[in-house]
Image 1 (cartoon, one colour):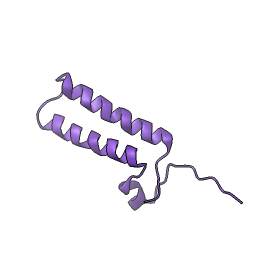
Image 2 (tube, helix red, strand yellow):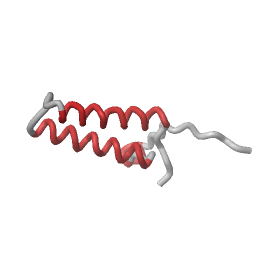
Image 3 (cartoon, helix red, strand yellow):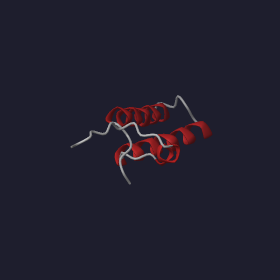
Image 4 (tube, helix red, strand yellow):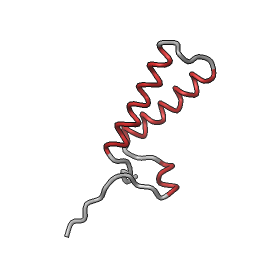
Length: 70
């Protein structure tokens, strides 16, 4: 798995995970919406930690800037 997430993308995904947890803990969201939000947030956390997004790979997207070395 080659990394395909930029640092900005990783930070945004991590912050979305934190927001999902805060909304759940403060009981702003509940029921199926809360559990689905936590699930999506967990996926964002995992992809952020791995620097790899399978959906980006399938769509041919790479937000990580590559540097060319000669």
